Image 1: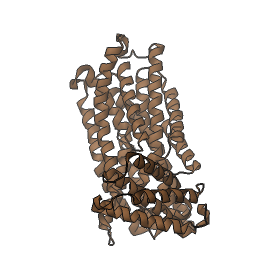
Image 2: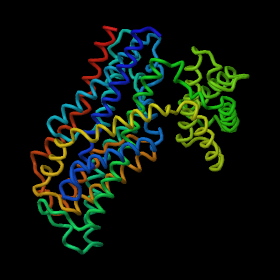
Image 3: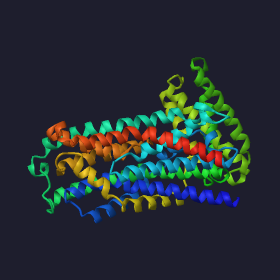
Image 4: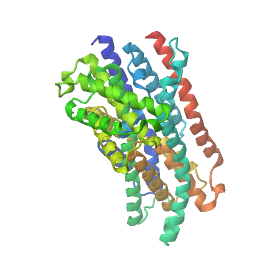
Length: 464
């Protein structure tokens, strides 16, 4: 590999780790603000505790969310015939996300790192409209972008409304008035209150690591596939013949379908599925591991598996597939097994992102902690308010991670704090200026990062 490519590869990976590091101290406040402002844990202990659980969360989170990030840009965009075009894309994506995250952190605004990342990716996709060989809307996986956008839109609304319900549930179940009062400065609450808040802080930190940490893993995999597709398109530990058996079973089951009732789009997916299945089976004849495949052919095999599995999934969700419920369930199992060849991340990538997020969690947290702890409500949060917001946030992030959807920890928890304040004294209990600034940051994140990443991409592409 050329020296210039090695330099750019290292630079891109360093920037991905920087994004995750910034994400750590940007989002740490969401987990530790409650235990710090209720005197349940000393700040230094809280951020180390949160950092360790973020680290563990990344290690145990799987890669479903990571692959959701990778799949936001179609493969044809990710791997260009000119590798420097891919580098331009990655540099623009990472720099725009880091710039916005650092800017909102500097002003103490709890903006969403997930929101920032999605905006940066969409900006790159949309910038293809301005290239001479424009592929227009094909440069964005709009189906995946829509699903991710819905998750980001719903998360603050869910955090706000469910936190209100959680506060009412607390009042019905816990009659001890102590937990509804403002903490006394410098005085620790009873041990049972501290244990409750330690638990909720730990849950938010752990699930944040599982969800947000995977975004960093997805970024690194995007870098590796774009710059070194021959090495990282396929998981070298997976038996190709085992995957071929999955592909053959998918084809057999799909062949039972009544094609006359499929829509035009579904029929195209159906035909593409068999075309890519035949190509995959032909290419791996007599081979069991990816290292036996020629470097230049490995990305094509990745493309085959993605087209087969994604196409089959879209036909299933279309509702026109004439198979029994049992057969569809079996088909989903074959699809999941086939994905193992392309949906993976080396252990060193997961460990590197775990360390970056964990270290970032322990640094730079004070600015946003102050906003969440002091400036959202007109009073300091009570023990019950802190616990309610964090229970809601951990539940929301945990569910999103289980379904492989990137969701905003910041949106879930800061809106949860707002909801807990409203549950106590209504909307008048919120500090208007702070809420306006937070909502403005939420609203501006997408357009600003779209424009910034798109402009940087066009600039870097012209230079490189």
